[in-house]
Length: 444
Image (cartoon, rainbow, N blue to C red; front, side, top):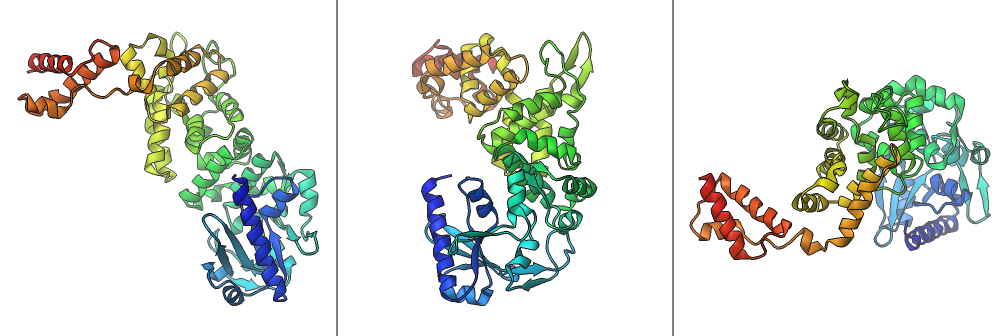
């Protein structure tokens, strides 16, 4: 994260606390920012908790935005990206729908606010004025022990908000913590309830597990907790699907993908999802002939990926980007035999750096042969952008101008001209038009 932005948010939080304390209120940093500061991690966001009621908060910060009237939450903003959430201490009644409490009570005791939160490490408050931590739930003990523990009754915490089960996995993976046994047992018991959560919320947690660090541990915990089969049954199906040992000495498809996830470092969300799903077509295409084979698994996998990501409500542009990664990941094995025109078209795929990194991870998690990877890197260094994407010698308008009517042959003629250009066989408009004429007259 940008250090200057983080500093600006921290300064705004400190200023907000100063205003509230000057008015005689309690006001503390709370939640993830306190946890991360104690761990020596620069927080992404800063949150403030106070006994000031929502009406008073709006009076003290008249230009703030009320983002949770029922929960007493305002958003104080200063400049682009500089914002801090401020919330009134509260306790909550029963949750009727697995997400929202049926009753919210504003409180003056910070301990009650801490005890309604999800995990002990997120229930800490920091008094910036006195310079000490308020810990009503032994969060510091669990931070020191590297433990994710639900506050109070873990089953009740997960029944209140089912998404907390995925959040437990994410925090454990990101921080390299273990999940306390009773908390993990409660996730197993309640795991089926995750299907009641909206696809968008599940998607966002999965992407954060994949990209915030510890992706392998995250997916091992998803499996151990019983959540994986409910959120991504197609990935659960990787387990036990054997692969030909001459190409995949690491074991089944699950073992292969876990190794790739282990090597992910600061990936884009689309690359991370591509790594996870690149072999999703293997379970349905598995067969044993002369050896284990997965006929057309990239094509089948691309279709499955598009369906999975639609189910998770991933934006169409990102869906297309991940689906392309899956569809094209097997093409690298042929790069050294490709015609120059075919290779150039391959190298100019959108976001090709993601395709190349997926291939590298794929190789390192299997036979470790990266000769195709190195070949492609050399070609990318060798070929200038104008060689990969030269200005077209002939356009459809050119063909119309010389008397041809648009039709099915137009596209094929233009492709033939571009192929010859990419191969270095022609380099002028006259040569391109001559080739297009020949092609169109033969296909007439």
